[in-house]
Length: 282
Image (cartoon, rainbow, N blue to C red):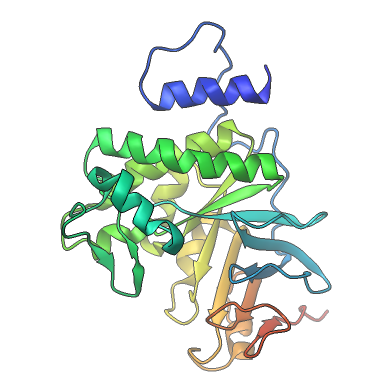
């Protein structure tokens, strides 16, 4: 079956329509590595959401925005904001999909830490299916662009919803994302929400995890207990628990940890920070 037909079949199924004749390809087994590049556990990582730039020497894994290109020869993860709007797309969501925004167009609920991002309303199955159909277009772009995997951000948006959304709502939506990613041959990574790691691995089928500041908040073990070496962690300069060297030395530190500047600027920009843990001796 061609990739185009496979996508059409999945889109129809996702929207709950009658399956078209000829759409007989079995969905990929969630959590399976069949047909996907193996995650390079323990590989050196770089996190390039601010702007893509040539990866530092030794890099095995890089995360870039869905609007960027993957890095040839490096395991490339595509960043997708699955539960909140991207800053440049907020006005479009309010204009065209306000029924899928928490609070609607009149009083949209905003992420206090990212005031240019509004929170999607995941409270009903119908809304989740509609949101998934829109976000799937970005996941498809990641697949056709040559990425190996997707990272779905803001799974924890329910914690910023004023009690309007639940973890169950967001888990139900991210399960649709996982099914879409796996069907397209992409691995998918859990982003944050450390306390749910084992459940998300088992029920959603996440293949790896992307943590931010798990050392800073003393929660790295929650990820490594669930995913072993398939964990990326990004710590940020200026907000460390102690020193980066001490973070690298802790027993539960993920093997793929990087220190970056908070704004994730490109290598040539002022304020750029990039440091990785030294290889273990012996």
